[in-house]
Image (cartoon, rainbow, N blue to C red; front, side, top):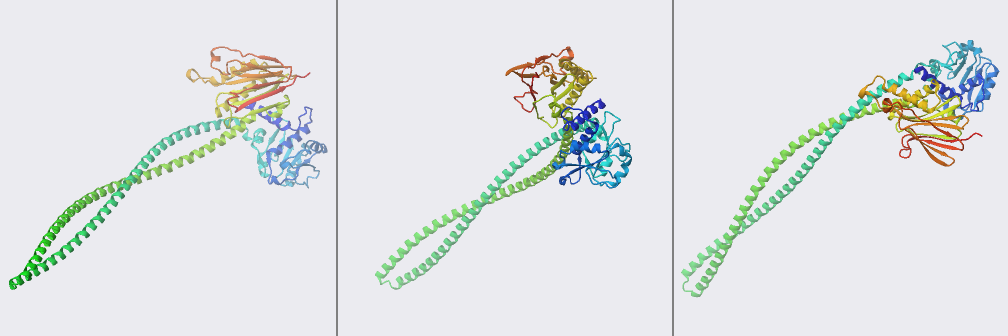
Length: 589
């Protein structure tokens, strides 16, 4: 199977190299074909400072016939940086000017060691059927019809040249075993995907724990903030009470000073009263004076009594205020004790919060490390899948190949993932050519491998089984898919993989077309009228086909006018992500 696939891919690559130069369909000589190969080799080789190339030189050591052949095939074309091509005939191998490519004819194979000594580095040598394997770089070989040329990668690299992996694979180098490489990439992809899923689940759980702790932390920080605001408010109240207490103490001290002054005045009055009594005893005769003195004494007594009463009231008021101040002081001291207790609790909670912050930081570092591992794993997986994309694109038919049979067409192919489970297929066999549009089960890498299986089986059925009827081809494809996917499996292990396909067979005279559809619908526009071709309800590899023998049916159409046929993959109108259109088959009169 590997040799068959390699032969198919190599044949496609040879057509891709030669076809752009010779598209008129006439017969060409072996020298013209080799000149075309050499022109296209330059597309897969990178020279040093090739951005500065102004003229691309190709030297020819051999008959003048080869020089004229190169001139006719390559001289009017352009290569690196759209530089014109200059063909140089070299007759003296001792004095070889610098050229980017040097062709050595088979008549000069024995001079190959001497030629290598006299050329400058960064020159690609293309030889013709030379047996000197140690000195060749790219060597045409006619011994093996399946292998048009051979490579010596070591000599190419020693010449400071870079070579594309595509030409290395198709040239027969050690990297040609691409099938083992794809298998290895698939195994690595499955293992890495499983690890990635496990790591994603762990990260998701850890993220949930971190989110919960962050939420608790935010609630505690809000609680601490509210308690701090309450403490600030209480401290403000305490300071206000202390200010009031100081004002009250100041008022009491001031009132006590006034009382002392009044007591001194009273003592002075008592002393004066005693003197007046002495005067009454001494001057009893003076009645008027005594009466006046009595009146004065009486008035003084009334004033004293009134002053004593006021003093008593003030003393009572001061006593009440002192009691209130004492009670407020006790309440303030009790509030201070409560505040100290709350501060101790807040300090303890702050320590717990700091400890939780440290734990969260450790977990965040762990999550960052996991993210770096995931990023690295994702980069490796993406690179592997990108390389698998190049392999998948290599099996698709080229626009140049289809244009030989269809005058007007276009291809709209946009896979949802990097690699696709859908593909289109083209083949030329006998009097007919075949076009197929295939939608495989699954997307991404699984779908891509199904597309590789489908492409290989279609080529095998057309080229080896020699079947030409589209319905018979689908019958045979269904049998091969069932055998390939269900071999050795029983019961619940049986896979339900397969593909939906539309296969068209068109005769090269463009007079008749046959269509067979497996779970597909085709739209036909003939003479400005739209008709729908409904295919069979079964898919290729459908589980029902294991229980019941089914046969796919053909739809035969006579091509009378300009015809447009649209074949869809999945739902063309709800998901315009991948579809193929073929249009304008002309009637040949």
